[in-house]
Length: 195
Length: 195
DNA sequence: GTCTATATAAAGATAGAC
DNA sequence: GTCTATCTTTATATAGAC
Image (cartoon, rainbow over all chains, first blue to last red; front, side, top):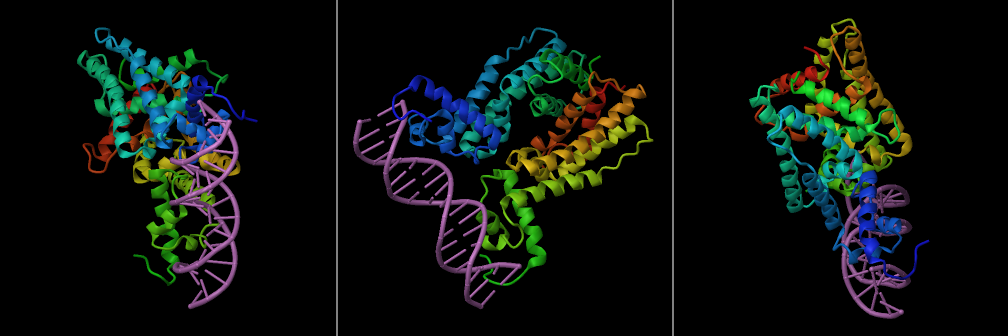
Protein backbone atom coordinates (compact mmCIF):
# COMPACT_ATOMS: atom_id res chain seq x y z
CA UNK A 1 0.00 0.00 0.00
CA UNK A 2 1.28 3.44 -0.92
CA UNK A 3 1.94 6.26 1.46
CA UNK A 4 -0.86 8.78 1.65
CA UNK A 5 1.22 11.94 2.07
CA UNK A 6 4.76 13.30 2.07
CA UNK A 7 7.29 14.57 -0.45
CA UNK A 8 10.07 12.38 -1.78
CA UNK A 9 10.95 14.42 -4.83
CA UNK A 10 14.58 13.35 -4.99
CA UNK A 11 13.68 9.71 -5.50
CA UNK A 12 10.27 9.91 -7.13
CA UNK A 13 11.55 11.50 -10.34
CA UNK A 14 14.07 8.76 -11.19
CA UNK A 15 11.62 6.12 -10.02
CA UNK A 16 8.99 7.33 -12.44
CA UNK A 17 11.44 7.05 -15.31
CA UNK A 18 12.61 3.61 -14.17
CA UNK A 19 9.13 2.20 -13.83
CA UNK A 20 7.86 3.82 -17.01
CA UNK A 21 10.81 2.40 -18.94
CA UNK A 22 10.22 -1.05 -17.53
CA UNK A 23 6.48 -1.02 -18.17
CA UNK A 24 6.72 0.55 -21.64
CA UNK A 25 9.25 -2.10 -22.64
CA UNK A 26 7.12 -4.96 -21.36
CA UNK A 27 3.68 -3.89 -22.53
CA UNK A 28 4.20 -1.06 -24.97
CA UNK A 29 3.69 2.66 -24.52
CA UNK A 30 0.04 2.73 -25.52
CA UNK A 31 -0.84 -0.26 -23.37
CA UNK A 32 0.52 1.27 -20.16
CA UNK A 33 -1.63 3.75 -18.26
CA UNK A 34 -0.40 6.58 -16.11
CA UNK A 35 -2.21 4.87 -13.24
CA UNK A 36 -0.10 1.75 -13.76
CA UNK A 37 3.10 3.75 -13.66
CA UNK A 38 1.95 5.60 -10.56
CA UNK A 39 1.06 2.35 -8.82
CA UNK A 40 4.49 0.90 -9.60
CA UNK A 41 6.15 4.00 -8.19
CA UNK A 42 3.89 4.08 -5.15
CA UNK A 43 2.09 7.38 -5.74
CA UNK A 44 -1.27 8.43 -7.08
CA UNK A 45 -1.67 9.15 -10.79
CA UNK A 46 -2.02 12.89 -10.32
CA UNK A 47 1.41 13.11 -8.70
CA UNK A 48 3.12 12.11 -11.96
CA UNK A 49 2.16 15.42 -13.52
CA UNK A 50 4.48 17.26 -11.15
CA UNK A 51 7.32 15.59 -13.08
CA UNK A 52 6.13 15.40 -16.66
CA UNK A 53 3.67 17.58 -18.56
CA UNK A 54 2.13 14.50 -20.19
CA UNK A 55 2.70 10.90 -21.15
CA UNK A 56 4.29 11.73 -24.50
CA UNK A 57 6.95 13.88 -22.85
CA UNK A 58 7.77 11.00 -20.54
CA UNK A 59 8.37 8.67 -23.48
CA UNK A 60 10.43 11.23 -25.34
CA UNK A 61 12.55 11.89 -22.27
CA UNK A 62 13.31 8.19 -21.93
CA UNK A 63 14.31 7.81 -25.57
CA UNK A 64 16.34 11.00 -25.74
CA UNK A 65 18.24 10.22 -22.57
CA UNK A 66 18.93 6.72 -23.80
CA UNK A 67 20.33 7.92 -27.12
CA UNK A 68 22.39 10.66 -25.52
CA UNK A 69 23.84 8.19 -23.03
CA UNK A 70 24.69 5.89 -25.92
CA UNK A 71 26.44 8.62 -27.90
CA UNK A 72 28.29 9.90 -24.82
CA UNK A 73 29.48 6.41 -23.89
CA UNK A 74 30.94 5.50 -27.28
CA UNK A 75 34.49 6.72 -27.68
CA UNK A 76 36.19 6.05 -31.00
CA UNK A 77 39.90 6.45 -31.64
CA UNK A 78 40.01 7.32 -35.33
CA UNK A 79 43.77 6.86 -35.42
CA UNK A 80 43.67 3.23 -34.30
CA UNK A 81 43.54 0.16 -36.49
CA UNK A 82 40.09 -0.12 -38.12
CA UNK A 83 39.69 -3.75 -37.09
CA UNK A 84 40.47 -2.91 -33.48
CA UNK A 85 37.94 -0.08 -33.66
CA UNK A 86 35.30 -2.41 -35.06
CA UNK A 87 35.98 -4.94 -32.34
CA UNK A 88 35.65 -2.19 -29.74
CA UNK A 89 32.37 -1.10 -31.31
CA UNK A 90 30.96 -4.62 -31.31
CA UNK A 91 31.86 -5.21 -27.68
CA UNK A 92 30.67 -1.77 -26.66
CA UNK A 93 27.32 -2.12 -28.40
CA UNK A 94 26.64 -5.51 -26.85
CA UNK A 95 27.68 -4.46 -23.36
CA UNK A 96 25.65 -1.26 -23.53
CA UNK A 97 22.62 -3.13 -24.87
CA UNK A 98 22.79 -5.82 -22.21
CA UNK A 99 23.14 -3.18 -19.49
CA UNK A 100 20.03 -1.33 -20.69
CA UNK A 101 17.81 -3.87 -22.45
CA UNK A 102 14.60 -1.94 -21.77
CA UNK A 103 16.05 1.30 -23.09
CA UNK A 104 17.32 -0.44 -26.23
CA UNK A 105 13.98 -2.08 -26.79
CA UNK A 106 12.09 1.18 -26.39
CA UNK A 107 14.40 3.15 -28.61
CA UNK A 108 13.55 1.09 -31.64
CA UNK A 109 10.07 -0.16 -30.75
CA UNK A 110 8.35 3.02 -29.62
CA UNK A 111 9.56 5.41 -32.26
CA UNK A 112 6.14 5.12 -33.85
CA UNK A 113 4.46 6.48 -30.75
CA UNK A 114 6.45 9.72 -30.83
CA UNK A 115 4.96 12.86 -32.27
CA UNK A 116 6.55 13.72 -35.65
CA UNK A 117 8.68 16.47 -34.13
CA UNK A 118 9.91 14.21 -31.35
CA UNK A 119 10.54 11.41 -33.82
CA UNK A 120 12.81 13.64 -35.89
CA UNK A 121 14.95 14.43 -32.88
CA UNK A 122 15.43 10.79 -31.93
CA UNK A 123 16.07 9.78 -35.54
CA UNK A 124 18.81 12.39 -35.74
CA UNK A 125 20.54 10.95 -32.67
CA UNK A 126 20.23 7.47 -34.09
CA UNK A 127 21.75 8.70 -37.34
CA UNK A 128 24.80 9.98 -35.47
CA UNK A 129 25.33 6.56 -33.92
CA UNK A 130 25.03 4.78 -37.26
CA UNK A 131 27.51 7.25 -38.69
CA UNK A 132 30.01 6.23 -36.04
CA UNK A 133 29.97 2.64 -37.29
CA UNK A 134 29.91 3.79 -40.90
CA UNK A 135 33.16 5.70 -40.36
CA UNK A 136 34.86 2.60 -39.03
CA UNK A 137 33.77 0.55 -42.04
CA UNK A 138 34.87 3.33 -44.36
CA UNK A 139 38.34 3.42 -42.83
CA UNK A 140 38.56 -0.37 -42.83
CA UNK A 141 37.68 -0.55 -46.50
CA UNK A 142 40.15 2.18 -47.41
CA UNK A 143 42.82 0.36 -45.44
CA UNK A 144 41.97 -2.84 -47.30
CA UNK A 145 41.27 -4.84 -44.14
CA UNK A 146 37.50 -5.00 -44.63
CA UNK A 147 35.54 -5.99 -47.71
CA UNK A 148 31.84 -5.24 -47.85
CA UNK A 149 29.73 -4.87 -50.98
CA UNK A 150 27.74 -1.94 -49.56
CA UNK A 151 28.87 0.11 -46.58
CA UNK A 152 25.51 1.63 -45.67
CA UNK A 153 23.80 -1.74 -45.75
CA UNK A 154 26.58 -3.40 -43.79
CA UNK A 155 26.15 -0.74 -41.12
CA UNK A 156 22.44 -1.45 -40.77
CA UNK A 157 23.00 -5.21 -40.87
CA UNK A 158 25.65 -5.15 -38.16
CA UNK A 159 23.63 -2.95 -35.82
CA UNK A 160 20.56 -5.15 -36.29
CA UNK A 161 22.61 -8.28 -35.65
CA UNK A 162 24.20 -6.89 -32.50
CA UNK A 163 21.06 -5.34 -31.08
CA UNK A 164 19.33 -8.69 -31.51
CA UNK A 165 21.25 -9.91 -28.50
CA UNK A 166 18.55 -8.39 -26.33
CA UNK A 167 15.96 -10.70 -27.94
CA UNK A 168 17.37 -13.88 -26.48
CA UNK A 169 19.80 -12.97 -23.68
CA UNK A 170 18.72 -13.94 -20.18
CA UNK A 171 20.71 -13.19 -17.04
CA UNK A 172 22.43 -16.29 -15.74
CA UNK A 173 22.08 -18.16 -19.03
CA UNK A 174 24.44 -20.51 -20.82
CA UNK A 175 26.90 -17.84 -21.94
CA UNK A 176 28.54 -15.04 -19.97
CA UNK A 177 28.93 -11.57 -21.40
CA UNK A 178 32.58 -11.88 -22.28
CA UNK A 179 31.87 -15.02 -24.26
CA UNK A 180 28.92 -13.40 -26.01
CA UNK A 181 31.15 -10.51 -27.03
CA UNK A 182 33.72 -12.97 -28.38
CA UNK A 183 31.11 -14.78 -30.44
CA UNK A 184 29.53 -11.67 -31.92
CA UNK A 185 32.94 -10.26 -32.74
CA UNK A 186 33.72 -13.46 -34.61
CA UNK A 187 30.48 -13.17 -36.59
CA UNK A 188 30.97 -9.47 -37.28
CA UNK A 189 34.57 -9.88 -38.36
CA UNK A 190 33.51 -12.53 -40.84
CA UNK A 191 30.61 -10.42 -42.11
CA UNK A 192 32.90 -7.53 -43.03
CA UNK A 193 35.28 -9.85 -44.80
CA UNK A 194 38.20 -9.49 -42.40
CA UNK A 195 40.52 -12.45 -41.93
CA UNK B 1 -18.16 8.05 -46.43
CA UNK B 2 -19.13 4.49 -45.61
CA UNK B 3 -22.16 2.66 -46.84
CA UNK B 4 -25.01 2.53 -44.36
CA UNK B 5 -26.28 -0.96 -45.15
CA UNK B 6 -25.59 -4.10 -47.13
CA UNK B 7 -23.59 -7.29 -46.74
CA UNK B 8 -20.15 -7.71 -48.30
CA UNK B 9 -18.97 -10.63 -46.21
CA UNK B 10 -16.64 -12.06 -48.84
CA UNK B 11 -14.49 -8.96 -48.90
CA UNK B 12 -15.00 -7.50 -45.43
CA UNK B 13 -13.23 -10.37 -43.66
CA UNK B 14 -9.93 -10.06 -45.55
CA UNK B 15 -10.19 -6.28 -45.45
CA UNK B 16 -10.44 -6.29 -41.68
CA UNK B 17 -7.27 -8.35 -41.44
CA UNK B 18 -5.47 -6.17 -43.97
CA UNK B 19 -6.36 -2.92 -42.27
CA UNK B 20 -5.75 -4.25 -38.79
CA UNK B 21 -2.31 -5.51 -39.84
CA UNK B 22 -1.45 -2.19 -41.39
CA UNK B 23 -2.67 -0.13 -38.43
CA UNK B 24 -1.17 -2.41 -35.77
CA UNK B 25 2.18 -2.23 -37.54
CA UNK B 26 2.14 1.54 -37.79
CA UNK B 27 0.77 2.49 -34.39
CA UNK B 28 0.93 -0.62 -32.26
CA UNK B 29 -1.82 -2.98 -31.17
CA UNK B 30 -2.77 -1.10 -28.02
CA UNK B 31 -2.81 2.26 -29.75
CA UNK B 32 -5.29 1.18 -32.41
CA UNK B 33 -8.99 1.16 -31.57
CA UNK B 34 -11.60 -1.11 -33.04
CA UNK B 35 -13.32 2.04 -34.28
CA UNK B 36 -10.18 3.00 -36.23
CA UNK B 37 -10.03 -0.40 -37.90
CA UNK B 38 -13.73 -0.22 -38.72
CA UNK B 39 -13.33 3.23 -40.25
CA UNK B 40 -10.43 2.03 -42.42
CA UNK B 41 -12.52 -0.89 -43.62
CA UNK B 42 -15.59 1.25 -44.18
CA UNK B 43 -17.95 -0.31 -41.64
CA UNK B 44 -19.14 0.57 -38.16
CA UNK B 45 -17.28 -0.78 -35.14
CA UNK B 46 -20.00 -3.23 -34.18
CA UNK B 47 -19.70 -5.02 -37.52
CA UNK B 48 -16.15 -6.19 -36.70
CA UNK B 49 -17.52 -8.53 -34.06
CA UNK B 50 -19.22 -10.63 -36.72
CA UNK B 51 -15.68 -11.62 -37.78
CA UNK B 52 -13.68 -11.77 -34.58
CA UNK B 53 -14.79 -12.47 -31.01
CA UNK B 54 -12.51 -9.71 -29.73
CA UNK B 55 -9.45 -7.61 -30.47
CA UNK B 56 -7.00 -10.12 -29.01
CA UNK B 57 -8.25 -12.87 -31.33
CA UNK B 58 -7.70 -10.55 -34.27
CA UNK B 59 -4.08 -10.00 -33.31
CA UNK B 60 -3.48 -13.68 -32.70
CA UNK B 61 -5.01 -14.59 -36.05
CA UNK B 62 -2.68 -12.17 -37.83
CA UNK B 63 0.43 -13.51 -36.11
CA UNK B 64 -0.48 -17.17 -36.44
CA UNK B 65 -1.32 -16.84 -40.13
CA UNK B 66 1.91 -14.99 -40.73
CA UNK B 67 4.03 -17.64 -39.04
CA UNK B 68 2.21 -20.49 -40.75
CA UNK B 69 2.65 -18.83 -44.13
CA UNK B 70 6.34 -18.42 -43.36
CA UNK B 71 6.79 -22.07 -42.40
CA UNK B 72 4.77 -23.27 -45.39
CA UNK B 73 6.75 -21.14 -47.81
CA UNK B 74 10.20 -22.28 -46.70
CA UNK B 75 11.30 -25.45 -48.46
CA UNK B 76 14.65 -26.92 -47.51
CA UNK B 77 16.45 -29.64 -49.42
CA UNK B 78 18.44 -31.39 -46.72
CA UNK B 79 20.40 -33.35 -49.30
CA UNK B 80 21.80 -30.25 -51.02
CA UNK B 81 25.08 -28.50 -50.30
CA UNK B 82 24.81 -26.65 -46.95
CA UNK B 83 26.14 -23.42 -48.41
CA UNK B 84 23.56 -23.52 -51.19
CA UNK B 85 20.89 -24.15 -48.57
CA UNK B 86 22.07 -21.20 -46.50
CA UNK B 87 22.07 -18.96 -49.55
CA UNK B 88 18.53 -20.08 -50.34
CA UNK B 89 17.50 -19.36 -46.75
CA UNK B 90 19.00 -15.88 -46.80
CA UNK B 91 17.32 -14.96 -50.08
CA UNK B 92 14.05 -16.52 -49.01
CA UNK B 93 13.97 -14.73 -45.67
CA UNK B 94 14.68 -11.34 -47.23
CA UNK B 95 12.16 -11.78 -50.02
CA UNK B 96 9.47 -12.99 -47.66
CA UNK B 97 10.16 -10.14 -45.23
CA UNK B 98 10.07 -7.49 -47.94
CA UNK B 99 6.83 -8.91 -49.30
CA UNK B 100 5.17 -8.76 -45.87
CA UNK B 101 6.86 -6.01 -43.88
CA UNK B 102 3.87 -5.34 -41.67
CA UNK B 103 3.44 -9.00 -40.82
CA UNK B 104 7.14 -9.35 -40.00
CA UNK B 105 7.03 -6.26 -37.84
CA UNK B 106 3.99 -7.45 -35.93
CA UNK B 107 5.31 -10.93 -35.38
CA UNK B 108 8.22 -9.70 -33.33
CA UNK B 109 6.82 -6.43 -31.96
CA UNK B 110 3.43 -7.47 -30.69
CA UNK B 111 4.30 -10.74 -29.00
CA UNK B 112 4.08 -8.89 -25.71
CA UNK B 113 0.42 -8.04 -26.32
CA UNK B 114 -0.60 -11.67 -26.67
CA UNK B 115 -2.18 -13.54 -23.80
CA UNK B 116 0.27 -16.08 -22.31
CA UNK B 117 -1.48 -19.00 -24.01
CA UNK B 118 -1.45 -17.27 -27.39
CA UNK B 119 2.17 -16.24 -26.90
CA UNK B 120 3.19 -19.85 -26.36
CA UNK B 121 1.63 -20.90 -29.64
CA UNK B 122 3.39 -18.19 -31.64
CA UNK B 123 6.69 -18.82 -29.88
CA UNK B 124 6.45 -22.47 -30.84
CA UNK B 125 6.01 -21.60 -34.51
CA UNK B 126 8.92 -19.21 -34.32
CA UNK B 127 11.01 -21.94 -32.75
CA UNK B 128 10.31 -24.21 -35.69
CA UNK B 129 11.57 -21.55 -38.09
CA UNK B 130 14.74 -20.97 -36.09
CA UNK B 131 15.28 -24.73 -36.06
CA UNK B 132 15.22 -24.73 -39.86
CA UNK B 133 18.21 -22.38 -39.98
CA UNK B 134 19.89 -24.21 -37.13
CA UNK B 135 19.81 -27.44 -39.13
CA UNK B 136 21.53 -25.79 -42.07
CA UNK B 137 24.30 -24.45 -39.85
CA UNK B 138 24.64 -27.84 -38.21
CA UNK B 139 25.07 -29.59 -41.54
CA UNK B 140 27.46 -26.90 -42.77
CA UNK B 141 29.64 -27.26 -39.69
CA UNK B 142 29.68 -31.05 -39.94
CA UNK B 143 30.61 -30.76 -43.61
CA UNK B 144 33.42 -28.37 -42.67
CA UNK B 145 32.20 -25.55 -44.93
CA UNK B 146 31.00 -23.30 -42.12
CA UNK B 147 32.78 -22.23 -38.96
CA UNK B 148 30.82 -20.60 -36.18
CA UNK B 149 31.78 -20.47 -32.51
CA UNK B 150 28.19 -21.06 -31.33
CA UNK B 151 25.46 -22.42 -33.56
CA UNK B 152 22.47 -21.28 -31.53
CA UNK B 153 23.80 -17.76 -31.26
CA UNK B 154 24.72 -17.65 -34.95
CA UNK B 155 21.14 -18.63 -35.75
CA UNK B 156 19.73 -15.76 -33.71
CA UNK B 157 22.30 -13.31 -35.06
CA UNK B 158 21.61 -14.20 -38.70
CA UNK B 159 17.83 -13.95 -38.33
CA UNK B 160 18.13 -10.60 -36.56
CA UNK B 161 20.47 -9.32 -39.25
CA UNK B 162 18.23 -10.43 -42.11
CA UNK B 163 14.98 -9.29 -40.53
CA UNK B 164 16.54 -5.88 -40.02
CA UNK B 165 16.10 -5.28 -43.74
CA UNK B 166 12.55 -4.16 -42.98
CA UNK B 167 13.90 -1.33 -40.81
CA UNK B 168 15.46 0.61 -43.64
CA UNK B 169 14.09 -0.76 -46.94
CA UNK B 170 11.86 1.60 -48.90
CA UNK B 171 10.17 0.70 -52.18
CA UNK B 172 11.94 2.35 -55.11
CA UNK B 173 15.10 3.04 -53.14
CA UNK B 174 18.74 2.88 -54.13
CA UNK B 175 18.95 -0.94 -54.25
CA UNK B 176 16.66 -3.45 -55.90
CA UNK B 177 15.68 -6.68 -54.21
CA UNK B 178 18.04 -8.90 -56.13
CA UNK B 179 20.96 -6.70 -55.19
CA UNK B 180 19.87 -6.61 -51.55
CA UNK B 181 19.77 -10.40 -51.54
CA UNK B 182 23.28 -10.49 -53.01
CA UNK B 183 24.61 -8.13 -50.36
CA UNK B 184 23.04 -9.92 -47.41
CA UNK B 185 24.22 -13.25 -48.73
CA UNK B 186 27.74 -11.87 -48.86
CA UNK B 187 27.48 -10.68 -45.26
CA UNK B 188 25.92 -13.94 -44.06
CA UNK B 189 28.46 -16.12 -45.85
CA UNK B 190 31.25 -14.19 -44.18
CA UNK B 191 29.58 -14.38 -40.78
CA UNK B 192 29.44 -18.17 -40.85
CA UNK B 193 33.07 -18.38 -41.87
CA UNK B 194 32.53 -19.75 -45.37
CA UNK B 195 35.00 -18.79 -48.07
C1' DG C 1 5.01 17.10 -3.61
C1' DT C 2 1.23 14.39 -3.02
C1' DC C 3 -3.44 13.48 -2.10
C1' DT C 4 -8.58 12.98 -3.30
C1' DA C 5 -11.96 13.93 -6.43
C1' DT C 6 -13.48 14.75 -10.84
C1' DA C 7 -14.07 16.60 -15.72
C1' DT C 8 -13.98 14.80 -20.15
C1' DA C 9 -13.06 11.70 -23.73
C1' DA C 10 -12.54 7.31 -25.62
C1' DA C 11 -12.13 2.56 -25.28
C1' DG C 12 -14.08 -2.66 -25.89
C1' DA C 13 -18.00 -4.92 -26.43
C1' DT C 14 -23.19 -5.96 -26.85
C1' DA C 15 -28.39 -5.47 -28.13
C1' DG C 16 -31.78 -5.14 -31.22
C1' DA C 17 -33.52 -3.19 -35.71
C1' DC C 18 -33.23 -3.83 -40.65
C1' DG D 1 -23.96 -8.70 -42.27
C1' DT D 2 -24.34 -4.21 -40.90
C1' DC D 3 -26.31 -0.37 -38.65
C1' DT D 4 -27.44 2.74 -34.60
C1' DA D 5 -27.41 3.23 -29.92
C1' DT D 6 -25.66 2.30 -25.64
C1' DC D 7 -23.63 -0.06 -21.42
C1' DT D 8 -19.59 -0.12 -18.77
C1' DT D 9 -14.94 0.61 -17.96
C1' DT D 10 -10.92 3.04 -18.26
C1' DA D 11 -8.02 6.52 -19.98
C1' DT D 12 -5.46 11.35 -19.67
C1' DA D 13 -5.33 15.27 -17.37
C1' DT D 14 -6.70 18.99 -13.99
C1' DA D 15 -8.35 21.39 -9.50
C1' DG D 16 -7.96 22.32 -5.03
C1' DA D 17 -6.87 20.64 -0.19
C1' DC D 18 -3.01 19.59 2.84
